[in-house]
Image 1 (cartoon, rainbow, N blue to C red):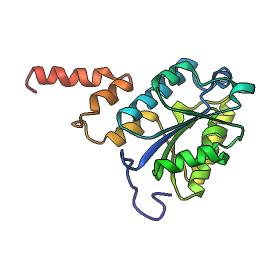
Image 2: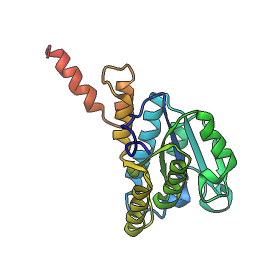
Image 3: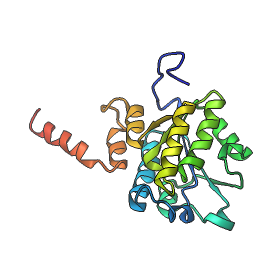
Image 4: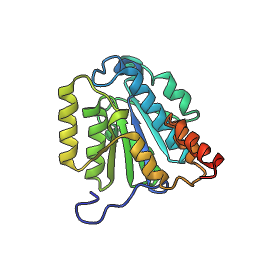
Length: 207
C-alpha cells in the first residue's frame, strides 16, 4: 500500500476509478449510522463529481431481484448509460463480471463506497489491497446498520491498509487545481456552489 514502502502517490484523473457497491433501496432502509438523505446526497455527489473528472465508474448490486431491490433512483439518474452489474457474491470482487469491469478501467487506485460499510465497501477494498491495488473508501458515501458495525469496519480496513476518507476530499485531491475547467462542475456536483460564487464576487471587485 502507498506510504508503507514508498512515497504517497496522489490520486489523479488518470490513475483512479470509482466503485459503487450496493446502494440499493432495501439496504438503504436499514442504515442507521448516517441519515438516508445525507447518504443519498453524498453518493450522488461522489458520482457526479467523478463524472466531471472523467473517472471510470463501476456500479454493482447484489440480489437485486430477490432481496435488496434496485439502486436508489437518484443515483441511477446521476449515471445515465452506466450499466449496473448484479451479482450474488457477498464480496463484489468475487464476481467475475465485476472484477473484469474493474480491471478494464486500467486504474490502480480504487475509490470505493458501499452499503454496508463493513461488508460491501470493506471486503472489496481489502481484496483490492491484496491484489496490489490502492483502495480508498469514502466513508460518508457508505452506510451501515449500527455504530458497532461502522467502528469494526473502519478498524478492519485501517489495519488492512485501506485509506479512509470522505468523498469530497478524494474528489478535490483529483481536481488538484482550482483553475482546471472542470472545477466549477466538480464543486457544483458536491453541492458547493458558494465556492464558485465567492470566486465570482472576488473577480467582480478585482481581487
